[in-house]
Length: 288
Image (cartoon, rainbow, N blue to C red; front, side):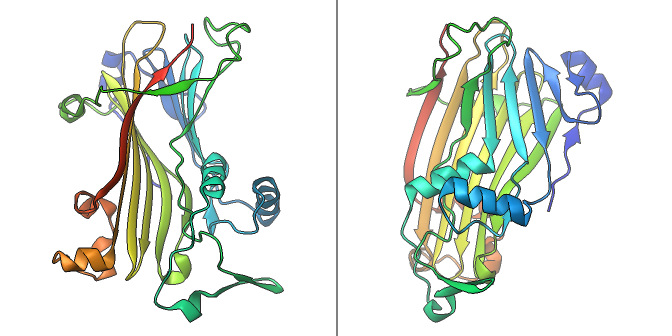
């Protein structure tokens, strides 16, 4: 289901120097940034075939919002952060995790497609290591053709995202959530990738979340948080924090947590109870 975007009060937007995007587009211009979300319908059958060919697979999630995206562009530096389903599924294909074993093995052995049956010998959960896409856009601000060919690099760092700043009572100028893909695992759980953005007068904050629940078997949460405090410098300071959590239902049950899938409809309710598998904080290195 498409989430409703939220736009701040006109007085708050004006006080912060923000301008909404024209022509009914979702997003705004603020402190040298253009932040825009796109909500589009799921891929058509023809587009699905094209994606399968490009990705080298015969499997895609039930609902792929292939033209939906979240994009944050910094005009002076040309930096563009982009969150989309295609790049996320490229990550899924490359990681190629083994399929999760489920109790109802016979039921899960096959998935029907027109005129064929496909053995579930692939990662049907569509788990992705994707943390986002980044690029330098040519012909933006001060960017030149000489340095536009450089790849942006995320470097490990000890800095942490300022959670105190995020909890400060600031007006929200813009908020939106974009679903990139979703699969209900043949009514045996959920696999969901979403991107959320929140823009305040002092900063923007983004959460890219992959949430997996295989009923009776496993829960997996892969969160990527990205934060940027506004400044007047030509190069923004962008921090990214990735945290992967995972636990079997059996291990949670042994600690006294309920096993009923209905309890875990919202990953926020269980996230802190899942052990951390991987965690790192990085800073974007912008050339120039």
